[in-house]
Image (cartoon, rainbow, N blue to C red; front, side, top):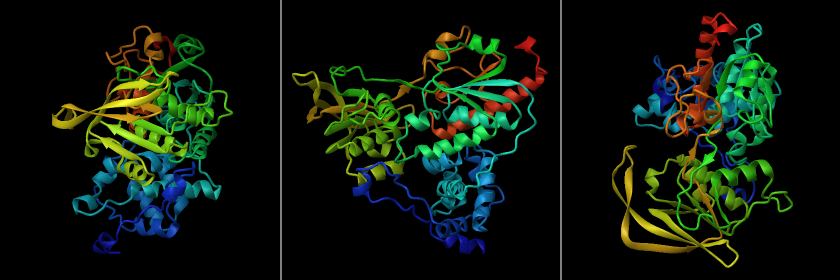
Length: 474
């Protein structure tokens, strides 16, 4: 096909489950492309001489190569190309903000057209491989006998583990929770990322020789010194940002007010939506979620599925300033979620049983842009609203997990609790400790965390080789 013909093909649209039905169950919302749709979309790729899409990808996937394999109908080959650089292609194809990264750099955007649907195609290739039963395992170098420890089994840790296993290292991942996957399991609902998808990616790493130890809290169950004594020569910290933030307003201690971290972890990992569960979560009928990010969208859409008759997003800026993906906002609206923008809670009040019953909202307006470039919200004097609620989920940000920073002497930590590392190598001031993801960034997307993991693996491999694998220098 000529480039002009390719440019005239319209972008395919992802088939989706019916909003009225899906908002009451946990089935995946996006249904995936058919083979015909995928080939059609792949034909839109112009195979640029200098592909900007690769530059926009934090893990540097060879995007034109895998897409051209799809165009030729070589779906399994496309999956193999993805796995050369990405440990989690089926995950990334579902939850990564491609519209702000690889797709934002697509030549079609410069031509004032819709970008090639790179994320849809990535998901398609990975799903084809899984459904075929012929899941490929990337080649690994001969084992070198060098033991590497990974703290946390989230996207940063998994990406790092994959690259280190390929290089021949003996990798062991230590996970604090009972399930492997970190935020991919506890933080993202199954209607957006089914657990079986994550499990297949993890099994692929197991096939490469990566070992997983769950129910092990590094910093409590074992220390960094314990790992060193056990012969681990390098440690990657990807322990995430699991410490929730609150707004410190009156009434936050009422029953029914909780963080999005607690809410999603209990629902996703502890079967808390089941009233027969050992630790059931409250299921409100009038639920407000405070915040405008992807976690807020996950929380409010989960509440809807758990029976909320009125599920609200309360956000202090306008919808245009929301950091959530446009797709998540669209899905939420289709599912009946109310958006109360330019509103900020200032107080919660409760009933005689100590359970939250109302929230007082301050009406806001947009002022001048802040340091992030978004217009700052300012109060409209004297304008408030009182809203009935029986559950409030606070999703206004998280702080890094404090266990590693507080338990490792000499580790350089910022005033926000993040581990300070070299931006290029992800190496801390303790040479054997590298870190990435939320523990460094304070908050990151899955793909940015994976990019950190890949950079850290490359740098740790180089550092260990320079040490000539000598323990005396560690």
